[in-house]
Length: 81
Image (cartoon, rainbow, N blue to C red; front, top):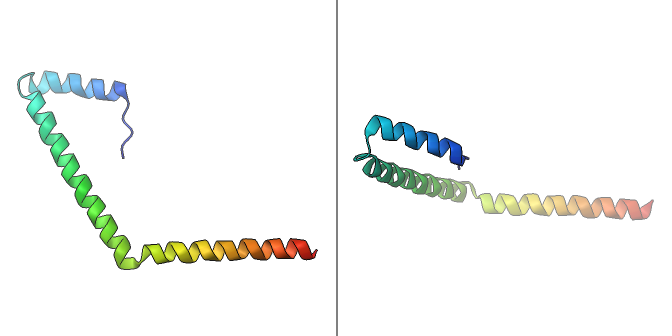
């Protein structure tokens, strides 16, 4: 989801170590990771529910079929020329 490099993680870790302290930092990191995972799961559930409600699979198939038909039409036109 986010593209964070090693340097950014190291900087965040050092700042967290200075501000929060070495005793509380591991617990805080665990809580943040759990919260992130919960949000990610909820977002994915919302996304899949939304896609199911609008019928995205059918839309994808329709678009694919239309593109395929256009491709076949273009091939037939180039053969006719």
